[in-house]
Image (cartoon, rainbow, N blue to C red; front, side):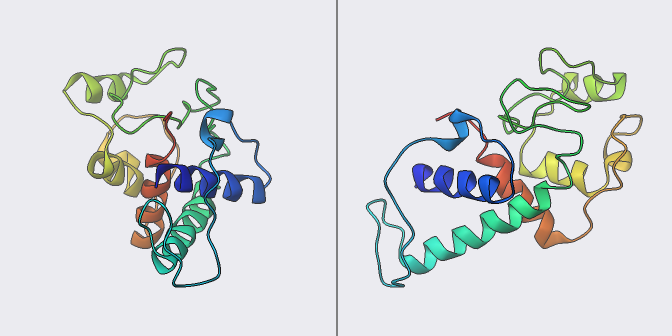
Length: 158
């Protein structure tokens, strides 16, 4: 399943014209077939695989908003820190990026980026972590937010 997700992420990023880190691209030979009854080696049926493709396409589309300031390449910080591997990371701790005191304090308070904390932050950054520097109004559409979170969760080394 993970390899299928990495292939889909890679295809989505390439389709949108972004460079893909080799760690994201991953390997594997699994493909999504048009045959809706196909069951892949990992037990994902054609219908489920098609749904995953749609989620990743929607997540990649929502990610475009982030790419003005963030990279998906491991260790490549821009105006904002890299989004690669952020699920499970303590906020305010990525090496080589200078965080606001508010973000550092949020991490020091014992928080970890997961669907709940990141969802609240991306919905309304200024309310979730007052004093943070991210100048982004937030993602109001719940489907866009969920697809983006699902997509971001896949950006990790295998």
